[in-house]
Length: 383
Ligand SMILES: Cc1ncc(COP(=O)(O)O)c(C=O)c1O
Image 1 (cartoon, rainbow, N blue to C red):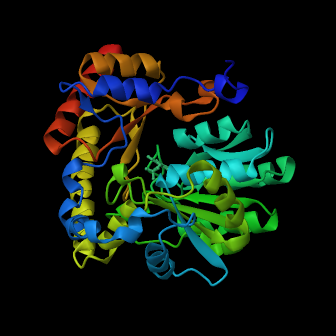
Image 2: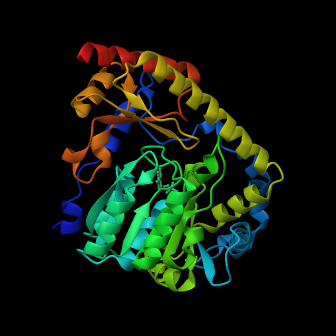
């Protein structure tokens, strides 16, 4: 049987390969985007887990838009306007897939940041979208370039991760959020705001969503993967009803609805009086690991490597002197450290400046220090 053309053109995932290599116990992995297993709030989920056998109704077929008590809770928690709604989905990744399938025809233009979240490139690539990119600096996307794209290419949507970007860790300042929202309204472009790291702010001031400035031109994706556990596979999509109605149709065809008992577990977790304490502990742990990694990089790497500080999330982006980053990642792996080289995050890999993404949430501080010393040694030897 011939494989569909849309699937044939998918490149093998370098990340999958590197993560497989990084699962070796001797490798210190700074490659994945994994939360630390020790943070999984199993104890806060236990009351619901124990109550489940008596909750027969959650084992019946459910509603496509989600488990009603969870939807009610989230509608209030997200302070949604009456015209907006929530859909729960099987991880925010499914939200992205539903958006792409509901709205993107082959050759429709989608604007993304460069570098960009790999999973989004895959989803829009599968729909054979015409992906064009806007460059990014430490303050988010280049506004002049974005407006030019909106003017010249009339894209259907702009997909972005404004809070603690994957892979760069960049968090857009307030003014940038306003500017992007205004452009989306002016040029009638839907803003797809992917916000899985928003709850992981450990420094600085909380900022409004970009979508708060363009609520009728945006869809927001959130996730419980980073603050609870990724294995639960629960995320949410919010936006105005007319935007979300086609997503419900596509979800019906995809999986009828997300797992109801798991949605009940997430509700129990969110309503647990100790959930805010759990969040604070996760943030404090990640902040201390980030501090260790950042300080070590500043201490051990030479001045031609640039590292911008972050205020949350899971990643640091290290800009390197000119080099073959794939070769560097292989050499690091030979030295038992896994990192992700920059080209993986660019639709056109040749355009990637030399850099690497480092994760600071999964390895402990001791291992982070050892990893940085090995990175510094490999970089010195490569000179
Ligand atoms: C930017 C971004 N969006 C979406 C996802 C998918 O998350 P989920 O586990 O909710 O499907 C990830 C996962 O790492 C991510 O980094």
